[in-house]
Image (cartoon, rainbow, N blue to C red; front, side):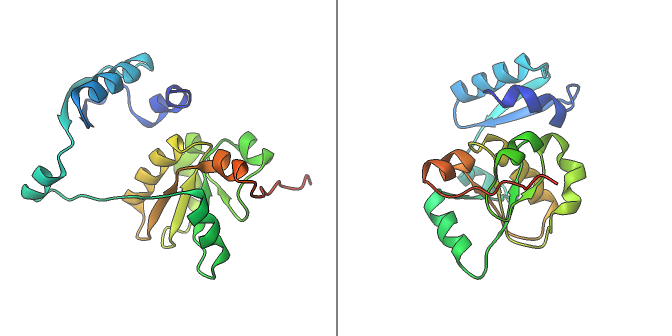
Length: 170
C-alpha cells in the first residue's frame, strides 16, 4: 500500500471510469477502497479474472514473466543479458541500483521511455515489485521486446548479498 497512494493518482485520470479485474470479490473491494483513498472514485464495477472464459470469447491476453533473484543473477552472468529498468525514484537510484541498470522513475515514466530500447528484452524492477508491475504493464503496450518483472527488486538483491552499483559523484 505504501507506494500505491503516491503514484496511482498520477497514472490514472481521476475522472476516468474504471472496471476492476480481480481474483475474487474481496480483492475487488480492497482495490476499490485503495483507489478511493487516493481520490479515484469512478469504479463502475468489477469482473472476476477467468482466463478460460476470456479465451472462449477470443479476448487478447498478454502475460509478463516474473523473475526471482537467483534466476536474474544467473541471467546477468550470461552473454545475452536483458536491459534492466529501475523504476524507483532518482533519490533511490543514487543510493544504489543493479549493475548496468537504466533509471526510468515511474513518476516520470512517459518521458523516461526515450532512454529505454523497446526492442530489447527487459527486466523491470523497483524496491519490492509494486511499481515494477505497473511500469511493465505500460511497457508491454509500447514494446516489441520481451518484458519481465524482477519481483524481488533491490530489497531481494541486497538480501542475497549481491552488489549494487552506486553512481560516482561528478
